Length: 346
Ligand code: GLV
Ligand code: MN
Ligand code: MN
Image 1 (cartoon, rainbow, N blue to C red):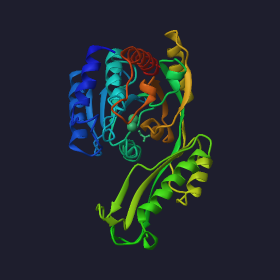
Image 2 (cartoon, rainbow, N blue to C red):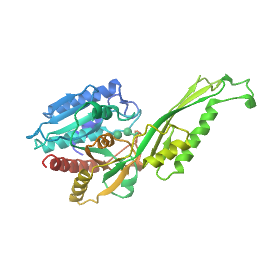
Image 3 (cartoon, helix red, strand yellow):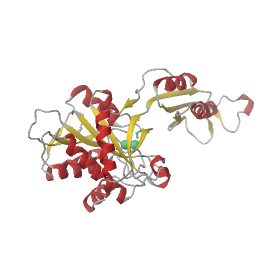
Image 4 (cartoon, rainbow, N blue to C red):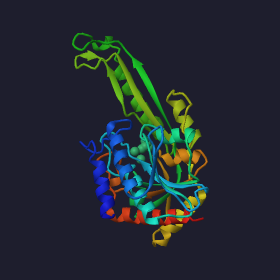
């Protein structure tokens, strides 16, 4: 990747950096990343809009501003101790690509959607309250091993999985850790532990499904007290709504709300495929197991597409070990630039 993109990625990564990226949605670190990127947008001559939810849209106004706009971008928030590329790469590569395309027939924009990791809140707000583009292309790291296994630097996303997030609570009887006999205990954490394994087994039994318990809150939370209550989170995903519904029902969880699976728009997919092939690469098509703002826009009727960059280190993501090579990122920027050029001049 180019020196500017690489140093900007480092600059964003180092905001609030301890172990990995720490720019959780709604924190001053996410705000600081947005301010920094907005200043780079202005430097590049883009007109910067900040909506009431904090989403940032940097526009290069086209020769025919009355035509539907073409956007690229992603998010700048991260999970705690996240990777350097998730979200930030799509924003910064998008800025580079829009600058490379320059003024076109249609208005081109780079968007930063707020608070993606906890449920695509910024893009959902925008869909309800703001203007949307006609087309959206999100460049993102794959966050899985498929492209590396296929020895392909780039991939074109077919669809984004359906998912749902829930909480479950378990109540027991708090008591003294030294004097309450084992047979007399009602330990809430033991109930929760059984449930965590149920999530694992139920997801493993459904083709393409996954289930994760990522947060456990144990009360009263003392070394010498039998746990009296536990709250945990459940994140479940599946390639389609029927399979997700089966998983929710097997876990005794409410069937609604769910985020429906979102198919990527055929015309953007075709342009991405053609531009990948123009570089002499195989256009591998694959579904996304991660949620993305592109899915929210697609569900709202925007012609949306995603270009994936191969993830290295076994495809690990949501981890400081997340990595993609400079060479693969450079190819992705080339494909994104060519794709935006075509979409903004048709
Ligand atoms: C976002 O990264 C998600 O899929 O959880
Ligand atoms: Mn992401
Ligand atoms: Mn993420």
